[in-house]
Image (cartoon, rainbow, N blue to C red; front, side, top):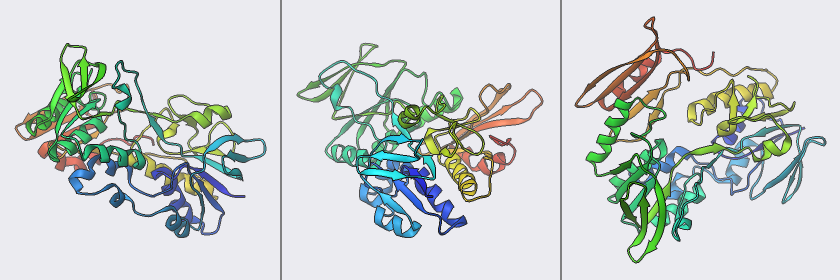
Length: 380
């Protein structure tokens, strides 16, 4: 029977491509609640710098992808429930049977409640449709407030400031991307973005958003205010566990799987931002690509346990470029930091001197290849 993939984001389409490399004929079905356009999601946060309109990010529509993949793609089809006993999806367009099922349901923006009559004007960007709406609003905006100084917030801040808009970033963190970067590197990024015009409001939170004759006014906990035409929430993402929970699958941060990416229910797999394997939930492109290759082999008859090599993350902030290969959570060691006027090199070493992770900023990012070869794999 068919391999059915729920989701046509980067995870779903990359898995389908990898399956076709191994098996050109196995029945393949993809189901998506949206139009099924193929596009690289990371491009959403630097489309302005690239000079691209939303439609220019799209590489192919669903009909083209169906032809390329020799697959059936059900667009605008919402999965209402999964009947695992009878191996079928119950959707708003009818039932769809499956032999093996892959949940590539991605992640959803974290949304916080805010006081004020302007709270409903907050935008978030997690897919192309949301980006189209955001872009239409931004085209008419001169001032943008970004709630959240994490990776996505900083990438959007760089993209928007270069486009000539006034950008202010707000968050409780002591420095940008504090969950991923050592402080020296985060401070260097903060300074680099400040140099091109980004204003920072760190160590504080938004308490209220009000509509005024001059736009949206954000009242912060430190007593200050920010006025903007558009407010973007970039607080973070959380795996979409809706279907997995309804099916009774084991979940934690994400959908828990074994090394073959099989969930607690035989014949049901997970992939992408919703995946948690060996305690790891890694919402980045390289983990997704590695997992898609391994899962495609397993689904086409060559059972393949997932391994992750060292996978540095490049952060798209041209004002101050960053590459980070974080040490494993809980790893014992210390940061060795070198800094000059052009960047930061931060190396995380064990007490025996083994390189366990690194962060490179500014001019030091050219050392990425050399250092990547020295750090251990993320999942051996």
